[in-house]
Length: 202
Image (cartoon, rainbow, N blue to C red; front, top):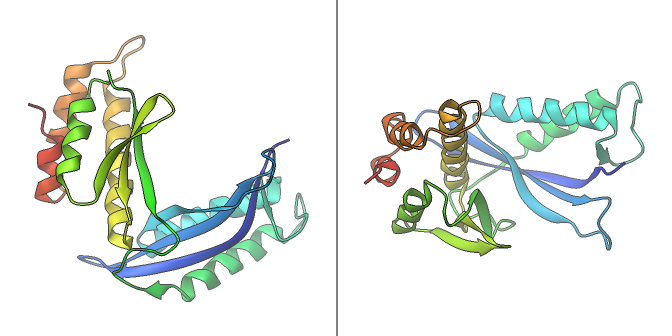
């Protein structure tokens, strides 16, 4: 059975509009890919309680064996609580910074095909500093380069917003494209103006 190998985690934080925003960076590899190669990637970002929720979900994966951490913890009583303590300690040591995160060169937000009904909307994000569309194995990917903590926060929100609107527009056997495009803008009121404008269908 394939599992994810976790080498370490690191946390960063930055003051948001209302509260401190945290992000959790994992150093992981897939056990079924050889040679084993570890990569840093952000697994969670948001208010502290939101990141703690992700840590708790990861602890369940440690217990089930889907996430390999430190030693063979699969099914061992106490392994999940040990991981939660480890994760909380990582958050306590979060580095406060507004600079781009050194471990993350870019963050992939949304994968899509060239003929995607929202491809033109995604393309408008390139007008916002640091956002780029790259080719990715026959697809396209909307990407944020050299992200800060707050950049990652908005990137996660963009993806969650798109996935929520996509789910709402999905009918039993088809996609209501007009509803999807309309909802992307109509329900983007909490985004900063430049992002709301990017979501606006022409």
